[in-house]
Image 1 (cartoon, rainbow, N blue to C red):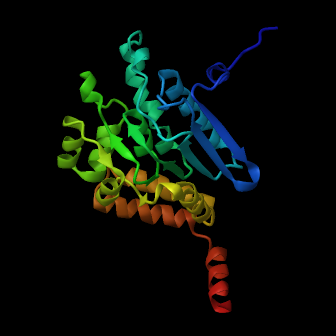
Image 2: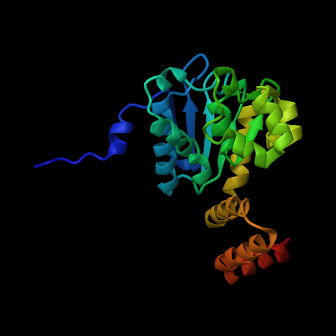
Length: 260
């Protein structure tokens, strides 16, 4: 009898530089980057992260995903040694893997401290929320290696902060500290480094208070509306809201307001 092994099983036979933590009682899954001291991300790790995000998206027990790091740095960037032997086709697929948090239907939080460079920054930009501290430094420094950001970094950043600031970051390889990232709208929240874990817990708790179906619909709608005109976006919003319409939900809400 021939035993067929799914490619994902081979890919995930040993996680490369990260681990996954999950407690069913919390409805939260943590992806923890753990390759000391800088948590450099290899090419295989990017592919593994994609498969893990896809698996967590399918797991109904998981409602919120957090990506964080062990140690003082989120990630110093990518391990470029793997690029020497890689084909152009494999390199071009890296953007698809790093975009996995954005495609995931569930809320994804990036807890960023210390260095958040290169692919570490790109991975964080693909998340829905970024928490930064006074130790956080964001950078897309591929220009120093004669390359460009290749996993969605410049494209996502341009949507967030505009062309001028993106040129400043990419073309000058500028490092953006946490407070500035928050002022520019790159970071969702800015907290003291000692409060990063508690702030992450608090955000997870807030997200868990909402309907999973509504959260998934909101994320997909907001992602899709980035590339549409205002009129089409309004039309899309109306259709999505109509599909979510449930009179019982409104009735329960009115009853709760009446009790208050």
